[in-house]
Image 1 (spheres, rainbow, N blue to C red):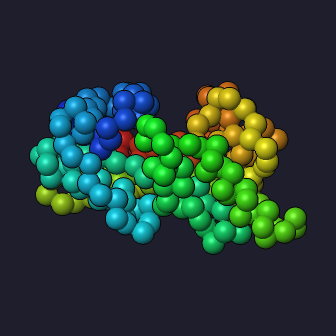
Image 2: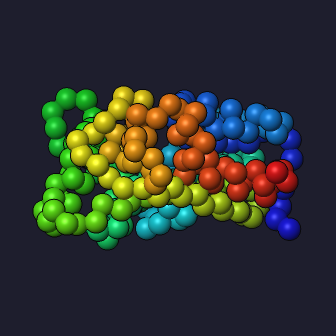
Length: 209
């Protein structure tokens, strides 16, 4: 039996207010008071791992050690079978705009175009199978940890379609559907997403259902 979270504070290892809100809502029924690493003034550790699990653990352990509280981190991304599972852990890096003039940030249309360009270069018959992965890592200040992995399979389409998603959602069609993640209503996407899969496993393990 794995270690269980009690009530009280849980540090969400993020500086992203949107991610804090989403995770807090998912955990609200379980009596946890979620606070972000950003609100505690914790530094973001370099994500030097080669896998989603490694990067999630880096973030969760750093937040737990610095705060003295249990911490939860996630790492997620898109993998494309024909591209050797790239971009994978470098999903966000492919969208970085640091070589452009102006404000730093991410250009997801550019990132989607890079993936599409690589697929097209392999020829028209190249399989377009892809999947999103999400890893949730729980860490305690004494070093104990637990990991939960989620995944949703699908295929890539072009050109991008839909306005409701983010990241690579406009080119990802989940298996069994004809609409992209960005065309589906948010509640439809969240019911089947890689993050929902990982959270279901966390909830089953920590809260018994």
